[in-house]
Length: 287
Image 1 (cartoon, rainbow, N blue to C red):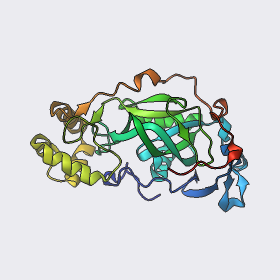
Image 2 (image 1 turned 30 degrees about the horizontal axis):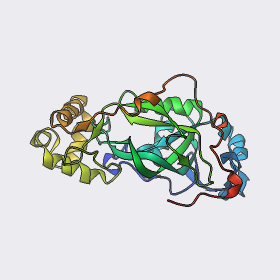
Image 3 (image 1 turned 30 degrees about the vertical axis):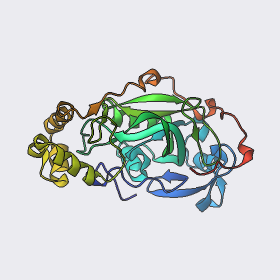
Image 4 (image 1 turned 90 degrees about the vertical axis):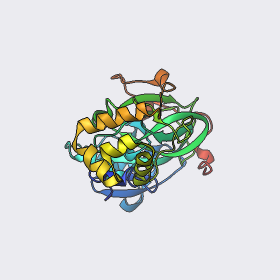
């Protein structure tokens, strides 16, 4: 909970939730996974009460009325999620759990974020199977997170029949939201493939500085200077983003465009029946 990339950019992407959890305020409560729908998972520290009962007691939306959102970068960090919501006066009551997503890999966005770091973005890689984090947001929370992502990211609906996504309970979701960068994906040093994302931020920034004298003049000589300058001035961020493109480092993201969805008609968990199989068969094997 202490790592909040919005306040300490070099901690990006922050510490992801260590397992199935309920974020509530400044606490992270463990969830006991059952071979049932999410609302029947049990909150360990609260006497094993069902999750939906706990949310109701807190005066919050039950899981069926929430919207499943796959977190790729700092939205997988309870500290960052709590920061985003509480600063707007929105209760930070959010179920979070690991999810295995097929067909998706994680790269680096082709822009510098308002906090000064280079954030992660998903991209389509059909041979990949990636462990990410699924958050369930109520409508107010989703709107708040939307506003922190737009216009640098867009929201898409991933169909579960094309991108299989499996929870620790064994449930396969038939769909979930995901944010993807509107700025494309940074390439690896060879220039042909996406650069892997989600690693240590300082290491990434050092590599980018070493590869571009123009970036060195703009935000160098080190990661600390980078995030200080970029976080303080929008013009510096915009120029750095232009440098990414002019260096030939950015691959466009078009694979998500058929799934882009920013409409008012929101996916609810209750509207997404599991795909195939039976939850009573037990948890899915770990990846």
